[in-house]
Image (cartoon, rainbow, N blue to C red):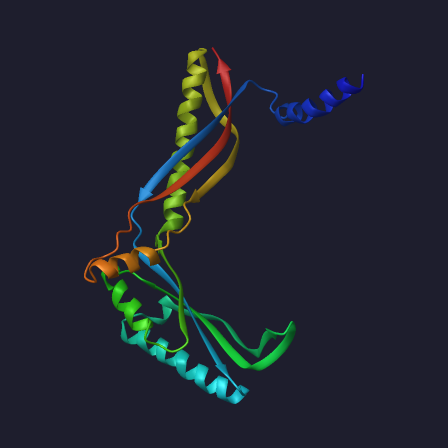
Length: 231
């Protein structure tokens, strides 16, 4: 009896999932993929300045950040493509002899910007490497119209689901009518692919060569319940 109750508890939620559809129906999953060539490079760099006093750190850091922003401006990047964030001015705490010790102060600023001319990547890489206290954290390929591509791919997944429903119902001599529910199961694109390693390798071989963005795949998957009618 105990095992019977456990089985009922397991299958009861499943039966409730389909109880809301009290008409003949078919459940299908639709998938679609869209492959596009990335058209942007997203850069993330940071500047961290150290000093003995708050005044010294503040002045040095402001100059360092201004120099980088000025370089990006002279490189043709507009303010829409450059964003500063995570600005900090704190005590510089280090661990020495198992104790926390304050050793001056530090200031930190993160800068994100995007470029569309891939052949300029090595110029930016080499120029940024000349600035004091600067770190290039990541450079990744991206799609400028990602949302539009995702919307288009979702529509493709819905059409694919409808085609499956028509095929399945047709095999039984039934007709597909209106959808009873539509659920998006998954819609995503692959994780941004870092270009840093490619940049370093290309720079070592031939500084004039461009990096290759390849193809990025955007995927979508939906679950649709269609009402069916048997002739």
